Length: 233
Image 1: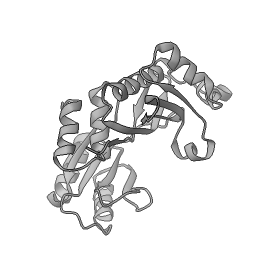
Image 2: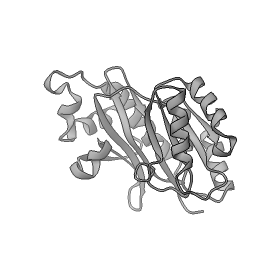
Image 3: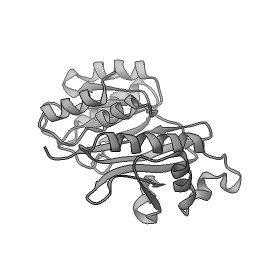
Image 4: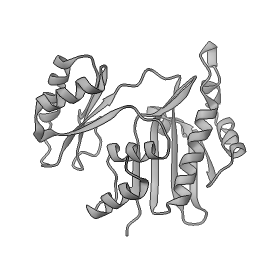
């Protein structure tokens, strides 16, 4: 497994400052944050190689077209969800390849499809001009822009800080067994908050991190998407 320094160095060597989703999740895995199983296949390798990778990951799964030329994958149809077998994977591959995208390095990301969560949350960080590394927590998914229900702390944070962040948001009830649902794993959420805060503190060259959504369960948490942006050199 590549280290954080190696992943950042690779991105810098390619004169980029935005990590791909695949790279972002690879970095998160490096610091001990759970992600779905994933593999990357160059689109030019063809359908058979992609199907072989799908079979190895296991169904159901998600396929995404990865390219710097595609900013909003969902809006452009570059995300195919709930693929149940090889036949559907081939159809998904054809659909992804039909998307207009002039990029010789474009690839197909094959990802294990995570089970339905108790809730979707967001954890992020930024380098504030005044306070330095800052960590953020809130209800995530498509609701994040609507609810704007978030809490902030200066990094690094303690277990007490992380616990306060959980309880500060209005959406805490969603995580706390609302209407008889399972309670989210608070310890896993707090652990992830502390890891993201520590990463932001240790690597000030990481300008922004956006882990959205993170799927919460009664016995864990999984980062199903992530976006990491480096500072200009």
